[in-house]
Length: 257
Image 1 (cartoon, rainbow, N blue to C red):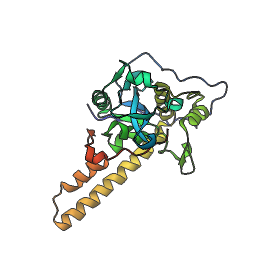
Image 2 (cartoon, rainbow, N blue to C red):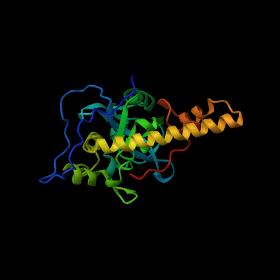
Image 3 (cartoon, rainbow, N blue to C red):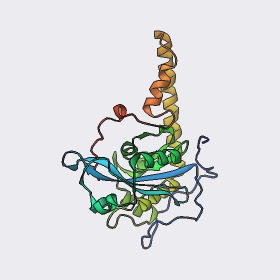
Image 4 (cartoon, helix red, strand yellow):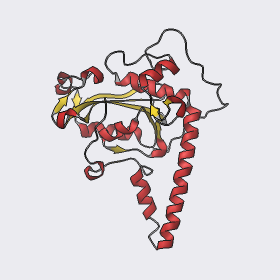
């Protein structure tokens, strides 16, 4: 698809006013299920491997810019599940062994098609990319856990549940996680601070371009083929969306639920 950009921002919005009143469950803003230039991703994971410390994809949800679900599915585990993390994930053995759970490869392909050329918003979204085994371009990634200083506690990311309540007046994760609600909360955080996220993204892209230029100059001086920096850039996630090979992905890191 065509390369995405953030929706036109118009005049700079006033300083964010924190909501008052009772918390609300995040709901779609319309009934329009169009595939928009900005989408949000949330994955729920189960524990595999030694003592269930490694994460494997169990559920994935993608919503559009209005919070309308484009994809929501359970994913059949590819290895024995040691810990279903039901308290956090909402996923049970019966759910993953039932007919609604789909093969990992088919789900990954569908997610890649939805994300291709689009801005993807998520909360610690690189953990989601890892369990999906995909590499989304850095310039099309917006992370509500890490990108904005105002949404962090010093250098530490804050829980999505707390950010949603404080900045949006939204109630999520009151018991088990709901991937659609979490994806909407993440998307609405991005919408609330869109100009700031895009400012950070432009600065990051400028730094990446300067780094590529410097690498190109260094390669020219050393007589290295000028395509080498582009290969490096693709490996860093600046290239097109693609599936990671097993060798590139390596063993999945432990991800706290």
